[in-house]
Image (cartoon, rainbow, N blue to C red):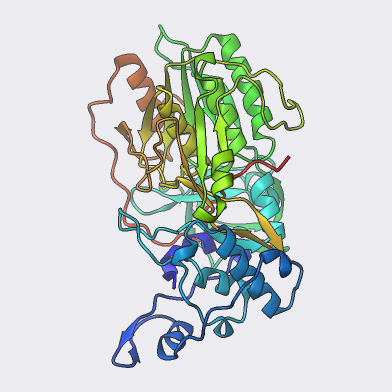
Amino acid sequence: MIPAGVRAAAAAALAAGLLAACGGGGGSAGQCVSGSAQTCAEAQQPAPPALTAGPSASYAGVCTLEGQKQFTRAYLDESYLWYSEMPAVNASLHNNIPDYFYSLLTPQRDATGQFKDRFSFIVSNTVADSLETGAGLGYGIRWEQDGQGRTRAAFVDAASPAAAAGLQRGGELVSAPAGASWYPSAAASISFVYRSSPSAPTRTVSLSAAQVQEDPLPMSMAASAAPSDRKVWYLLFNAHTRGAQDKLIAALGNAKAYGVQDLVLDMRYNGGGYLYTALSLSSMVTGSGADGKVFEQLRFNDKRGQETAESTFRFSGQVQWGESLYGEGTALPRLGLPRVYVLSTENTCSASESVINSLRGVGVNVVIVGSTTCGKPYGFSRADNCGFSYYPIEFQGVNEQGFGDYANGFTPTCAAADDFENALGSPGERLLATALHHIKNGSCPAQPMAAPLAARAPLLSSAPVRGKLLPSRR
């Protein structure tokens, strides 16, 4: 079984779209000593043979509970990177598909001691659409914890209910109803106690959920306090969602016209998304000397050897998967930078880490400022069946040097804690100020990192889980 903590992060992130986990089991002398009632039941009963599954296509669209279980078992057996590690599961003890899906995931740990699969998930088709487009029902606010363990507003979407109520970065969530969902799946409202900063007076805020469109690239500009002898461009990049590639091309075209010498790529809250967007971004950072080299080669399970042989994404000066504004074959602006700065936190994940890994693979000096990234060298594609969207891990990605073993994340060159006291893009904001110091001096600031993060209590919400998605099939 996958322990509750592994699935809790996804459950918090996707609210009603993702069901809570059952606990880790175990027991001795016929007595179950830990885990949920369902886990204990499985521990105390001999498990019958797992479902014998034929091709998943045979069960696609068969929306009885039994038919969906057959599809789930068959699809994972075909596609899951770690299919050989799936445990024998008593399918009859699972009365819903999400629980059954999670019960099949590998319980193995990786070399870092973390659960190998802390990333696969299943959601409704509606939630999946929202993850890929950045559009969906919500309040438009992202909460994170600061070094003192307080819940702070990290980012507020423009034209959202939270923005209309005057919420802004740095505000503190003082209290909220137990089990509050910040990513509702239906019309909803929420009231909570808030203050604009930890020293400000409190007030009660009430929000009604509305359709919110996330901006994947809300800020692109010359850094206002850059060292006088360097032209620095700052890019706040929050998601590899559909449409992000178009915005990146326009933004880096402006950076090139400016004569950029150093690019600061703020991906502290970028949990990933489409791999083709990461490919275009990385190609724009480099020059033509990288063309034809491996951006990322995908390694699937041993049943999918042909796909592994055919799934290599390479640096290119042209758009390879077009969006609305810039179609396939459009020339990309190339910056030809030998060095790039990435602002990171533990939320910097998946396709964002592919940018770091791929650039390092072709010799670009990636200076990471912030904290260690999430550690997800894996990815998936989306498979829909009977109202559910399946995202089991399908591949591991490696760069030009054949490296893809960063399950413990990328460690920062200059460690610094997220700074909720200053606006993103402000020259005084700690992560950006640290990058500017390094640009000017070639070294990290002498002062130690701000207070380390407190032990993390479960947040009432997190950002939506995305991941590393394959480009749309052509």
